[in-house]
Length: 385
Image (cartoon, rainbow, N blue to C red):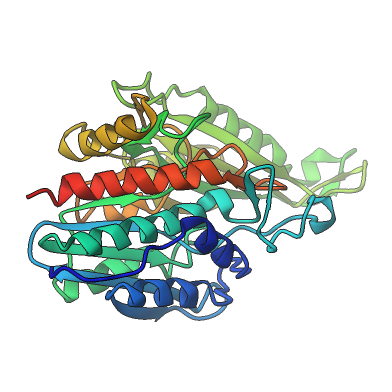
């Protein structure tokens, strides 16, 4: 990549500009226009990719790239945000992006518009240095929602255009309490299941004339909960099944209902695969209620990027800026790293996440500036002569 004269990027101002776009999934509301403009000013080639249709789309996505050859490193993340909740409960308007007491306040500040702004600011320095190799951005507008029309189809596009990176850093808010205290090198997988048991409605005084669906449903849930899935692994906590809803919707005290429903979620480590857990759920349900309906959605498989060159590079950059030695962790929920891992090694690192998805979501100005330094340090190490 040839040396270019480019203007420095203020990551705090860019964070504010991104927050002021109310990009609640699947709406973009100009967020990727802001990002595309910033990247094009640095010389990136920007590709706008729109996938899907209603009700979960269409979704705006963006791939940007600069340079050529090896190494090929990518930043990945999302410009969409979760809903604000009760806007009256916020201390400031959630999309105004005001700075108060050294904190940028607004939906998406921590998750993850602050990190995207730091990506861009660090990339400006990288472009100025003119190191050989390719740097790319993989940015979706569908991470907080169904994640159907975002990163997964973008990866297909990258493969079709011979733009698969060698390694990727996802800017999710992985830091727990202080910037740099945690890096995510993997995630547990996730399975959701909806179980509907059919019965026959009738009078409670005449149970022989009815069929109560609650009885087998309770047995199903008890059997599923009774199994110890595993005791964890060296890098993963134990897998767990949680019942997240039981619904009958019967307002009458003297009626046996016709239907009973339950929903459950399994967060599983790399001892399991989603299809295996789905088969177990279906077998268990069938043993107690052969006429039951079961719907299963596998949101993602467990994955691990074993400690090595990528995690070490990021950890070194973190320590150089913060003085902290980050913990390598697989805790927390899912992220789009679950898709990216099929193409290349992927590690997640970003701002502290304590306020994400909450009222008065914040990111400190100091942390955004320090994160820019860390991402710049990563780029310097990846693209070292």
